[in-house]
Length: 100
Image (tube, rainbow, N blue to C red; front, side, top):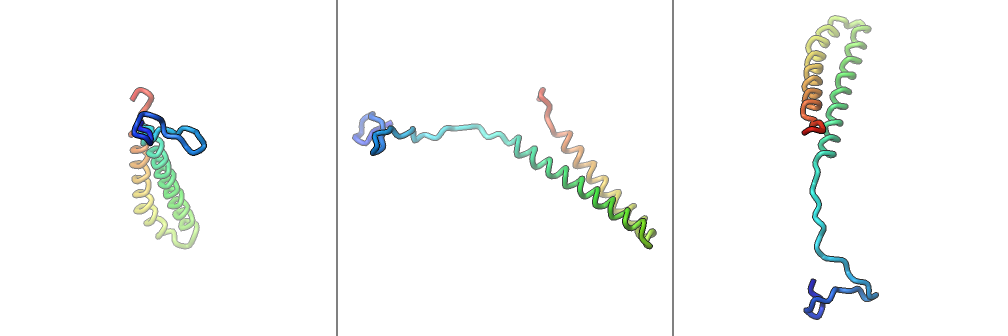
């Protein structure tokens, strides 16, 4: 490093302590933890969607609208279960084991 007088003397603070190197320390970015956190949020969100839909069907079945519950269950619940299966397959299928 070049000092204030143009030589190789280290830069120092007014207290006499040397200033640390101005060159930043390079580290490698690992996207793994952030990716796993997002996958976990997606998995929990889709599980919440399944539970909420099941609760909706349960409430409709025990109300006076059982025909509507049957239609709701056949159309919406089957689509939500398919979505959940796709998310779960993506989550577990894309995770890499210790062997790569």
